[in-house]
Length: 490
Image 1 (cartoon, helix red, strand yellow):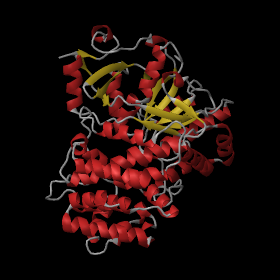
Image 2 (cartoon, rainbow, N blue to C red):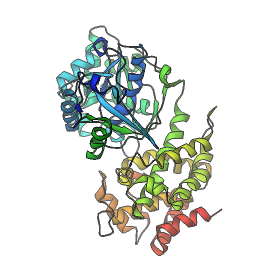
Image 3 (tube, rainbow, N blue to C red):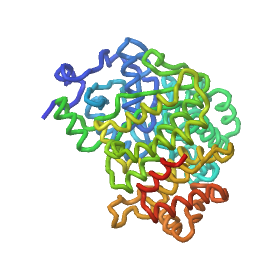
Image 4 (cartoon, rainbow, N blue to C red):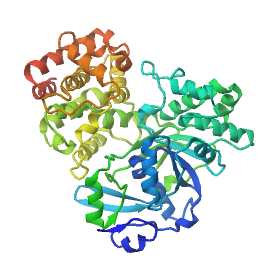
C-alpha cells in the first residue's frame, strides 16, 4: 500500500513524483470549470499547475463544478484528497508523474450552489468540458436547439435552472443586476468553433428569457474558440494500480495521458486571463485553421482506424497501429483526401504533424482502447468526418476513402454486439444505426438516410455510389481486402 494522496502526504511522496512547488494556501479562485473529468485534469489543470509553480497567477485557481451523477462521484473522490490529482504522463519508455494542485474547491452538485459560484466576482473564466453532445445542438443543422425539452424547461422557469447553460444565464443576470462584469466562457470540447457554439447556446437561451439580458451578454461577454489536444483514456483499476505500484500513491481518481499537449486559444477574454503563454499555450487571433487541422488529422484519424480495427479484432489502438494495413490506410486517407483540403498555417508542416499523430497512436504505454474510439459515432462522425466529406464534395475533391470510412462504420454497426466478438454499440442512436446498417445490405442508402446524423448526404449520387461500392467489396472480400484496395489505388 502506498501513501493516501492528501496535502499532508506530499512530503512523503515528493522524492517519487513532482508535487506542487508553491504554497496552495495562497491560491485564490479565478476559474470555475464545468465537467471536471480526466481530460480537464490532464490538460488545463496541468498547464495552470506549471504556471503556479513559476510563482505566477495565484489568483486563477480552479473551482470544479458539474450537474451530472459522475460529478457527484468525482467531487467525493477529490474532496478526500484535498482536491489533488496524480497525472501520469505515459511516454514510450519514459513514464513520469506529477501531483497537480491547481484546484482549490468543488462546488456541491446543486443548482443554487453552482449559480452562487458563477455569480462570484472572483470567477472571471467559466471553462467547459461537457462532451460534444452537451451543447443542445440540432443534429440536422448543427445550430442551437431552442426546442430541446431541457432548454424549454429552463426558459419557462429561469429561477430554477437545471442545465449548465440555464445556470450561467441566471448567474450572468445576477452579475448584471449588481453592476458586475460578465465572465469569459471557454469551451475545451472537441467541437468545430466551440466558442461560437457556446455563445449561440448561452445567448439563445437568454433570448428565450430576457432580450435585454441576451443583448448585454452578446455585447459584453466573450466566448473564445480553442483547440485542445492530449490523448487521455478513462481511469480504470489498471491505472489506479499503476499509480500505487509505480509511484507509491493511493489516488482514488488518477489520470493517465500521453506527454503531448497542445492548446491554441483565441485571445479574447473580457475579464482577463492567466499568462498561460509562459507554459506553452498558444494565443492567436483566429483558431479556425488549427482547430480544423486537429479535427481532420487527429480526430478523423482516430475515426478512420476505429471501425477497421474493431472489425479486424483489435482491442487496443497501439496494437492496431502495428498492423501495416491499418497504418497504411490511415496514411493514404490523410495524404490523398484530408490534408490536401486544409488551409495552410504559417510554421506548421502537415506531413510532420501527421507523422507525430502516427507516433502518438502507436504509444503502447497509453493502452488506449479501440472501443473508446468507436463509441458515440453519431456525435463524433458529424464533427470529424462529415465536414471533410462536404468540403471535398463542394470542391470537387475525391471522396473514395471517406466513403470507405463510412462503409466501415456501417459494417461495424451491423455486427456490434453479435456473435462476431465485436462489442455492443455504445451510441445514443444505437437502435437507428443498427437498423439502418442491417437494411443497407439490401439498400445502401438506408444507412446514409439517417438524417439525424447525415442530413442530406444520401442525396449525393457520387458519394452514395462510392459508399455502395465499398459495402459490396467489404461484404464480398472482407475489411482487410477493402483497405488494401484503397491503399493500392492511385
